[in-house]
Image (cartoon, rainbow, N blue to C red; front, side, top):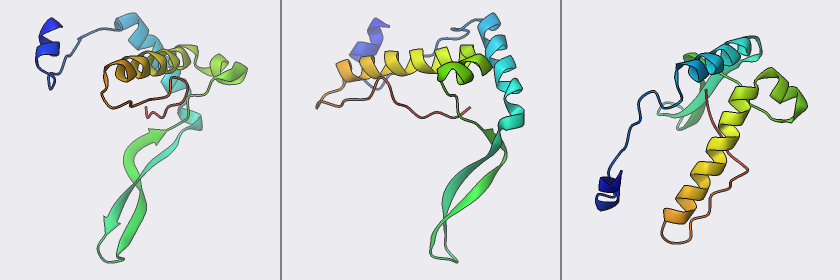
Length: 112
């Protein structure tokens, strides 16, 4: 990792960083949410209409990972992962980023 500080455009990849057991748990929780998922949407420029249009992505489903008692009961590992990642990454980026960038440690967006 020390080489990354010498090369600001470096990328670091950690294989199996969460471990097979945790990945299996998160997959199981995600699959249990399938009945409440909806087709994921995106936008693109439509030349014929001259505007941005919304479309459904093929074979991509979407859901909200929510905290609170009900959300946590449905998918505790996913909730903890999103919360931990949001808090940890925001703090690291805020500490390292020049120019006073301030990312929230409590608000985020994500896609599964």
